[in-house]
Image 1: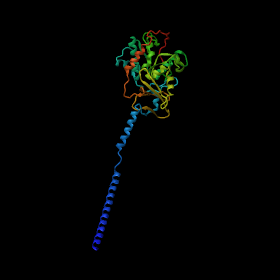
Image 2: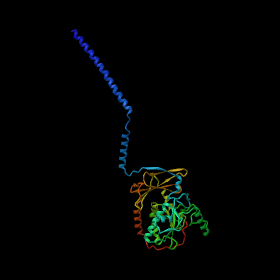
Image 3: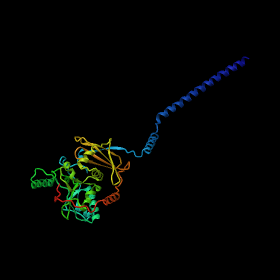
Length: 374
């Protein structure tokens, strides 16, 4: 009996010892596992790829939901560029701050492009580069319509020195203290290279009548406006000059003509359309929708920030006194890519169709022999 009791006690001690050892081992094992997990969690970062992928997916979904969404960015331009561009206003009040004009010889360009249906009076007559091709295309379409080769370029780019000579000669001839026929030196559009004067070899007195009426009625389709009209003399301070044309670009010429605005009125009206507010939008005869807005600048600063659509087509022009005019190109509601090419064939077709409505037998109005001088 005593022997059995002794065996039972020995068994319980052994069992307790084994349980203790197993417990210690289990605790040690758990500690090791937990420590390893902690160690691994400290050296394994979250996946940047996973996060970015989710963000990219979200962005793509947002773009799909709004495909017309366009990102605008600010580009920095020199404040002095306010004095450059197709829409600079040069008149009695605003002097031309010129220099470095990109000019091309008219007769030289005619030779390069095999155009023999018009010429400039002298071989050294020049015009700003971007205005040559629209001018030549307009004259070419006129020539094809009327088989008329009598047009000549009587005036184009002038230096300030030459403008001064013309102004002083006019005062000497008229006896007046000021001229309404010749702009002040430094205040003539001819000094910009954007303007030219027509004459013709039949009477040497271009008045924009007869066959030539087609040019005055259709010049806006090529980006030109008849600058000095009779009903705008009080604004321009220059007498009527049906021979004087100014390049401003197709959208602006279209809007000016359709709304009977001279350049002074147009540049001032655009100032009410600003980025972030109401912009000026219209569709011209070339089928393109244009969006236009004005960006004022601090003329005392060295540079200005101009908001434009990233990767889209746009033009920027100074107004020659206090800001920039931005022109955006749209196909319906979507902005046109910067890589797109102009549809010149479509523009030409529209011009030809519109010209059919012009009265080919327009009666000549009374002519006054006035040499183009402004």
